[in-house]
Length: 243
Image (cartoon, rainbow, N blue to C red; front, side):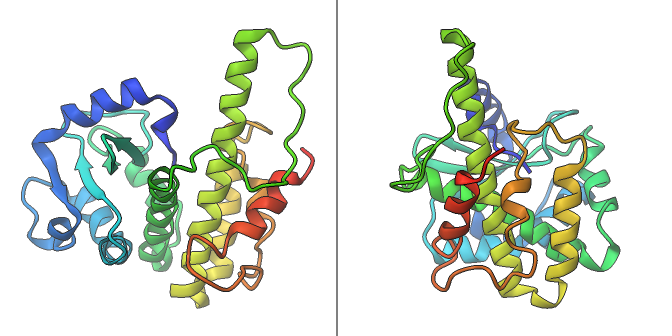
């Protein structure tokens, strides 16, 4: 789970290069009949089906892109935003992490786990479509920029912190989806996500979302309301927490 939107030039090139396997959400929702996809791609698309169907019903401008070239080292599932549309990008060919991610999930949690990861990416889509990417709720304090940084490093630091906040928001949306649709599996999936975020963790870096994941151990912590709104109080609380 990651958001390559922080590298828009390279991301745009990769997405456009994958145009040979571009399909709408409604087409790929019938994954069993999709042609030209590998077994692992079909597994992920089928698993994400309920989230893709929800996105279609919500009229989000979402397409699914399957990269046809080998993509070792890429996030198996990621979100791009190109020319006003969200692109859920599958980078699974020649990429052992696609299977390794599933292998780290208990077998009986894999379908729900894929849904959680797809909902995470859908949160990135929502933020872009809303024009809110990198914005924070009014009145929420941000940590001070380290005085020792020069201008170039300040820009990189601000980009890293903005991406980290967006990843924290997306993790909360994934957990909120899980609480609503797989309440019985919530505790185990929360524990799995926390373990994933602590694996090779670099505190304060792009994907260090522990501050947010730790706020929702039971799932009852989410506010009432629409999926993307019910996470906002916890998201703001996580932003304000000290490192």
